[in-house]
Length: 146
Length: 81
Image 1 (cartoon, chains in turn green, blue):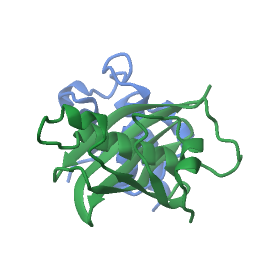
Image 2: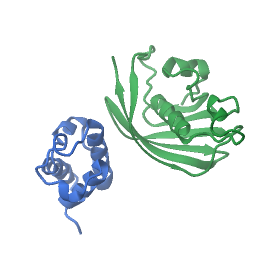
Image 3: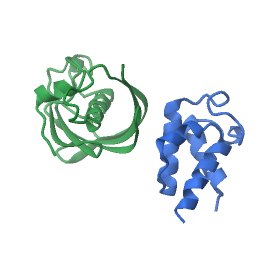
């Protein structure tokens, strides 16, 4: 088990502003389970248009946060220098959005593997706000290492 | 009860979004059904879940037709008995 701060997260995830969607990792068991936090604030650029005067977090951004948490799931502390050249491609998503997410909410994203092979994986992800499930999804993605 | 071939045909049909009738035993997943490698992985995972078996990654390349997929699945089902 391990806790990662934003500096450590940025050593693993290739994403950067404005689409680095994980703020903290509170639980990390490589290949078994990741719990990550995303604090949603009114400063997120997408709230300007989604929707004017009525900010609701777009479902695709919740999926993006889940996908980034999924990358963490397969992060191995050894070797210490992660493969920064790896590219991640989403292949398929089955998702259900149960409650809207608003500025001020903290998304708690839990990702567990369904099936992993060397160059691809299927994972289950659940997003909660205040212990209430707001979205769940199954993500299929491939990893291309250069 | 459905036989394994029929059950696996339904799994494949759902993942490739085709009518089960199109999934003939000899139809080639990639050439005939427009499948890609990610779909093949989804099929493998769905079969593992349904039959509570574990199929190694090397077998993924053998999943090229319904007939071959059923043969692979049967191989691991029998091991569990």
